[in-house]
Image (cartoon, rainbow, N blue to C red; front, side, top):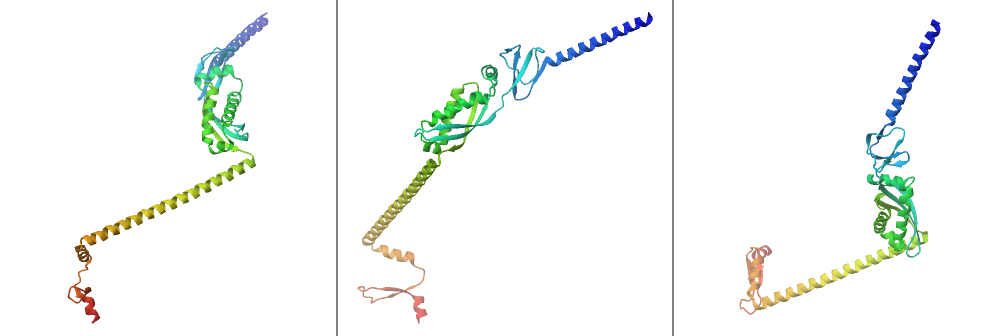
Length: 278
């Protein structure tokens, strides 16, 4: 009888250990299941038994109802993805574009984004609306204008895309990486651009020649006017000649050669030059 009693006692002790272990395991599960951590640059969407909480969970450590609440992380960092768009210009030319879209999800829109859109936001929201915006803008411009004014096309497409997407996402920028046309159209546009450059060069040369001609005329008129003024001054003031001789004199004593009668012309010769000739 003593042996049987010991076996029963040992069984009860073992059951107690098992119960304590199970309870500890449950407590550990509940402890870990009742907490969550949202990584930096993310916000959490709380879903409790299929119901989405209207408030998002900020980054960091938090508590939740264990086992019945799930926290889904959503990135709010800026992302960049590439897409392609096939458009037609106003002159019915096919234009293929490659774009890079810079976007991010605002934190106040992550809950509504999760409720209203499934899958990756870029595929479900951005691609169709940006493609639609690009097509609307390019349909109003010729193929040549699209190529020449790509920055203007991009600005209009960006504004249209933002209006279509609304507050779900923030489109930071759209970059037109590549615009491709048919080879025939590219050749025609290139030839036209060369002609325009040659015409601009010819116009510049013509304007330069006209400016130079006008400058020459103005210079000639100025010189003629100066000669007339000088001649008039000499006629009205004969002493001006003597003044100019004095101003230009180099300091050497001159020798006057003439008939001395006052009726003939006199020649001024430097004395040094006369001595050296002797």
